[in-house]
Image (cartoon, rainbow, N blue to C red; front, side):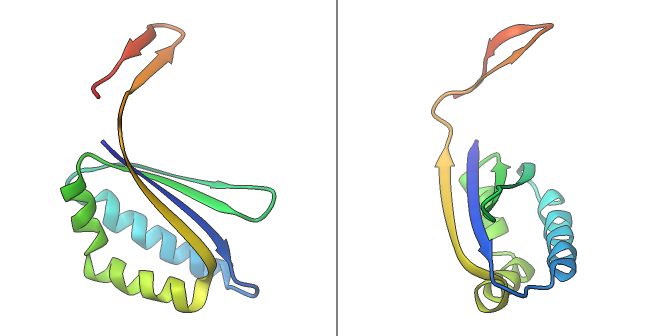
Length: 109
């Protein structure tokens, strides 16, 4: 499993409706790709946004990173949308979960 943490701050005056449309399109593309696992967005009170994305392999992530439409939006993000961003690509060292019904369960590394 590969987890990508994408932390961003928007430039002043960014068209938030446009950002929502772009985000929806990127989700549509990414979620249709082989190896896509999940995507979640979070907003902090201080104005930072965090996206957590999971792919099942570095190869699947590479295909997403290099997708032509995604590349175009990456460039647009730097030129129009973000005042700053940080991307962290992480591989899973350990995984486990808990549910009330099933208790704690170890997952694959």
